[in-house]
Amino acid sequence: MRPRALNFPVICRVTAGAAIFVVACSLAAWWQWQRPSGDEAGLWYGIVPPFAAIILAFVTRRVLFSLGFAIFLGGLLLHVPGNPAGISAWGSGLCAAGMFVFDAVMTPDNLHILIFVPLMFAMVLVIAETGGFNGILVYISKVVKGRKSAQFATASAGTVYFFDDYSNAMVVGSAMRPLTDRFRISREKLAFLVDSTSAPIASLALISTWIMAEVGFFNTSALKMGIANSGYSIFLDVLQYRFYCIFILSLVFLHIILGRDFGPMKAAEQRALKEEPRQKSDETDTATTCSFWVALIPLTGLLLFHFAGMWYDGGGLQKLREGASPSNWSYWREVIGSAEHTILIFDFAALFGLCLAIFSARFLAHFPLKRTLDCLWLGLAKSVVPCLILTFAWSLKNCSDALRTDDFLVALLVENVSLVFLPALVFLVACLTSFTTGTSWGTMSILIPIAGPVAFQLEEGTYGLITMMSLGAVLDGAIFGDHCSPISDTTILSSSASQCDLMQHVRTQMPYSILGASVALLCGYLPIAAGRGWFASFALGILALVAIFFFLGSRTETPLKESS
Image (tube, rainbow, N blue to C red; front, side, top):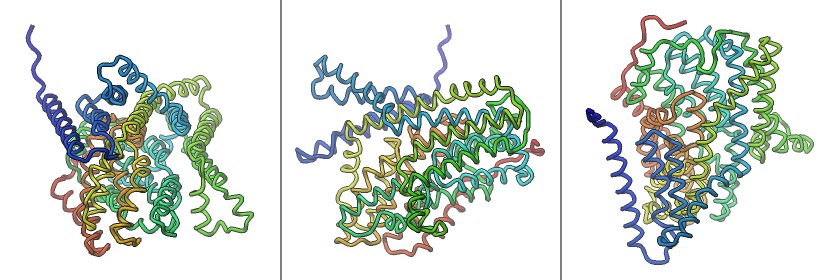
């Protein structure tokens, strides 16, 4: 038997991953070893499970295996180092790994999300199978005439859908997939457009599901700093210093206008152009094209129910009785920001949208009831893998919390920092923390109460530029890490809704996210902290993005005849 030929790309991937893992762990262990005894920074091996998950995911391209192994490893590290020869310690470690998963599933918010995802998949599949998305495609095709306008329409849809990142990713990715398939736009590009216009726009919006979390974190930070500013006023103060979100949104539209790509995304686009055009979505086996109302009614119902539920939950009716005016922007800002059960509202909104989709399929598209039930079952089946990945990602977060991974990273990176470099360092810490843990909100909850007071003290008890920039840097770094991490929930949902392989999505999106983060760092946080003007820094960043796309990128070849 002939020996199998060596796969050098795989060997290089494994070697590089192992080297990075060993070096990172060695440096972490050395740093802790040379610190004073009794330090409360956490233990160095707290970084092992998340780093192992990241490295294994990139090396093996098997996300579930990587997450599962990291959770198992984390359970052992929680108990075995203190008693490596004890059988009970190993048994406790295995039980701890199981409890990480159990707690992740039984957490109410996580459980509601696991209900939301199958309902959304089922609704989307019913709409697709009845031809509703094709109906929207026919309508939009009157305006969209090529690849550039199709990408612009997708990015615009993600920007307009500003009030929630989860449903943004699911709805926009599913609705725009037939259109981008028609013009041979790669699924990787679709996932990038969806992912890059979900969390960034939701975190910047004055009314969104993010606002309650951000305002709550800022309230906590304000109490620690001892200032009278409300959480919402701090949110408004830091908006102009949200450089990563500003530049990644600018990058999305600039690269569409320029028509240029580089790196793995360019290769994905060129591959998509060589393939036969997809005439229909992957999950439908019918060429039926119905009225766009078959899709518009359930999607509109989903959005209206979501918005109305947040209005009621946020005390909108009570504020009307108290004499507040709904024509006042602050009324809606306070109402949406006060909603306490947003994820539960997602579930009911998705269920309402699914019921409307079934109704539209039966009475508008005259779709057989049996086929509708088949769609429901298939939609539930398609949601199993994304739900498993989400569950394992949350379990790894529980593992990181138990090992105090966040405490160790914060203590490692935020020490003895010059005032001018503090916002940039906070941004990098937030990037690393969010990347390794896969959670933006978790990163914000850990770092905002720390970064605000640290900056406040360095500014000699003044709520000034550095404090505001540092708080904005936490939000931006959390979103960057969330974009690049294969264990992030929004990354998983974006790739699932776009029907794109998760690791392909991460691999193709990462160079663009790193570019946006680099421009934010070099043209935003560093120069403005040093006293440069905001407008000049922003203009310089835009020029840098244009120059890089012209230098690194090139136009994707367009076929002579686009499919119609």
